[in-house]
Image (spheres, helix red, strand yellow):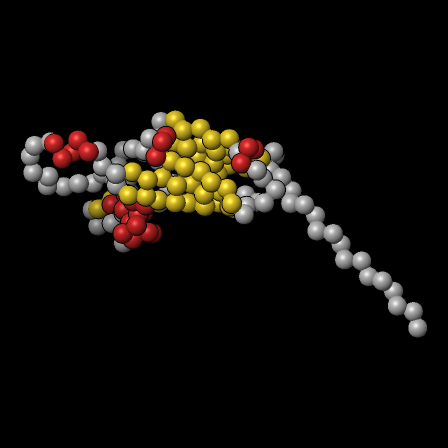
Amino acid sequence: MLLPSIFGESLLDDWMDFPGMDLPDIDRKLYGKHAANVMKTDVREHDDGYEVDIDLPGFKKDEISLSLENGYLSVNAAKGLDKDEKDKKGKLIRQERYAGSMTRSFYVGEAITEQEIKAKFENGVLQLSIPKKEAPKVPEKKLIAIEG
C-alpha cells in the first residue's frame, strides 16, 4: 500500500525531512558534545516506592558506585579503554567507544537510608528500588496568646 502523496512524493518523506526530525541524533541535539555522558534513565512510581532503570552499556559492576548524601542518591560510572588496545596492531582510524566518567543525582529525601535502597546490575542496566517515605513532619508553630 502506498502512502498518499503530493506532487509525486510521499507525505511521510516530507515529514521525515523536516528539520529537527533526525531521531538517532536527538541526544546530540539535546546535550551537545556531552551526549555520550548522559545516563538514559526510566523512573516508575509505585504505591510503595520507585523503580529506576539506568542504561550503562559497556560498564562493569565494579566501575559503578552509588552514594547517598543529604537526601541525594548519586550514581557514578567511570571507565577507561582496555589496556589491551595498545597491543592491537593496525592504525586506529575511528574510536567511538566511551572512556571517561559520568554522574547523575536524584533527590530521594533525607528520610531514606542506604540500607533501604536496593541495587542490581544486569545486562548493562542498573536497576534501583527506592522506597517511598514521608519526610518527618516539622512541628507546628504554636502561638502563645498575650493578655492585655
